[in-house]
Amino acid sequence: MQRLGAQLLHEGSPFPIVGANTYYLAYAEQGTLNGALDLAASFGMNVMRCWAFLDAAKPPGPGEVCFQYWDADSKAPRIQDGENGLARLDGAIAQAEERGIRLILTLTNNWEDFGGMPQYVRWFGMEGKKNRFYTDAHCRSAYRNYVQEIVTRRNTITGRVYSDEPAILAWELANEPRCEGLGGTGKLVGWADEMSRFIRGLDANHLIAVGDEGNDKLLEIDAIDFGTFHMYPDSMEQGLASIRQQSDAARRSNKPVLMEEYGLKDQAARNAVYAVWLKAVEDLDIWGDLVWMTGLGKSASQPYDPDTYVIYSVGEAPAILAHAERMGGVLG
Picture 1 (cartoon, rainbow, N blue to C red):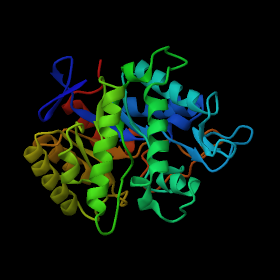
Picture 2: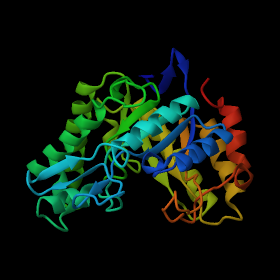
Picture 3: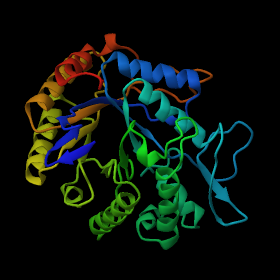
Picture 4: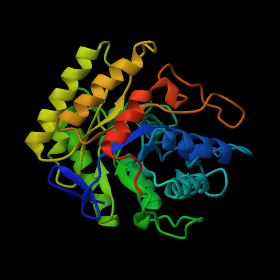
């Protein structure tokens, strides 16, 4: 996969994106993993986005899933491998490849859900000071170490190093990174520039994005291949305005931009509104879209509470299937 100007290409041909977020995909037990991937495939989706982080405050107990945790002896985060650790991410990558689905893997979170930046600053004694994640030397080093562990990891199922995995579409620095307050934008841009260049030095094969909600300054970073925006408007018109605004940003930057998260709370109106938004994506300079979110109901093997945006079947949002068919369907 490569970027050429404002296009994403696979083997020289345009690769428009139609997909979904299922954030817990890489944490899931086998049955849930297969069910979530099969659901995406039933929509004709070719890309899914999920979290490639799961940070714990202390060593995990028996059966507890996490990807890294605080090790008091070494005073540093430590990777958890095996069936309740990164082996689950191995499985998600391998199963996605079997279905012709590519993954956007997000490396940390602005929010405290599943650890993220708030956990990093707590690890290093800065509770409540999330913005220090971008500037504190310990946090920056810990994040780089985790990124290096992931990007250079050898998949226990496929035998390939992650940097060579064909099922990975892109690395994403963070989910919705924000650095608020005086000088915050400059700190965020500086951090994103450093970390995207760091990943590029480890992996020349995959795309890199920030994972932000729509920030023109981040599109200017050389190592960033495509922009993202997230939208949860109250009306169809507000959504269309956001799509037009981001289409303008794509033209100015000469880079692809994805409507990476979108959702509407009004379930009765949802399909009709999505049909309008997705037609706008097709008509304007937006390279693709990932709905928030597709997923399975809560169960013993899927422990996460579904939110109001979850779509459980094609019948709930046939507009997405029709859109995928027009955009080209699943990658063969």
